Length: 341
Ligand code: SF4
Ligand code: SF4
Image (cartoon, rainbow, N blue to C red):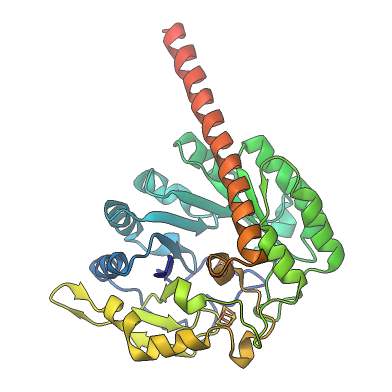
């Protein structure tokens, strides 16, 4: 099976400072410069040759990358499914330029309290995020909220769900994963996620919850398929191996005659050797870095494979409902305005 997903880090810069993330402040990330858009486009063409289907543009705050509209348009033109997670703090500045270019537009939000938002994210922007979600909806997008449950935020999560229901957007709810020495969610917190997962508009990946509670990846029988399933590209044009979070290799991507060698690089001996090792390094013990397991669970049909499929089916069903409601509401609006003319 070819890799399914590319996690394309367009920038490591971010205007937030979340307590559970070191991306914008990590010393090795600070000097990293973003590449010109034609380099990204050449890599997108190489990803296409590799058979990748989904490109998740990420960061840092990907909206900081000033050529974002151009690279999203190229990605759509090449036939990729596009995904973009952002904070919502900069969305109004690009919303019209990226309208219709993102298939899966996500806003991160884990609380409905302004003060708690500020404490978690180091920036006072709760109201702005809500306004951004409303703006996305008014532009005809189908946005979702990504809600990360920490031991601090879990008990306010029901209010996030209520807000999502009011805005009629989905909530992709999951527990904080083990990175930056984060305190993981305890058993009562997981039970609360399971309770909330039954409510309207809530999508919880049950494969992840089971995996999380079983202690994550085990190096003796690795479940991780990070290298096989996901291609990770850094803002300065390097292929990161085995994953962004624990990369111990950065391979420079070469460009010649307007062509990227990313596909050849992926087939190279060094990458294929890494594939054989995925999930079995010492640092992989207990790993629950969700960015890689959703696609890893597309590999052999064990219980995680089936639970992942079930969760995807619920997500698709909820999203279809959201789509129909949005269409109906637009239709009612059109009828009202034409009657009022
Ligand atoms: S918004 Fe994202 S990249 Fe920025 S600090 Fe928070 S988690 Fe990290
Ligand atoms: S188990 Fe975790 S740390 Fe190891 S390669 Fe997979 S995603 Fe990276």
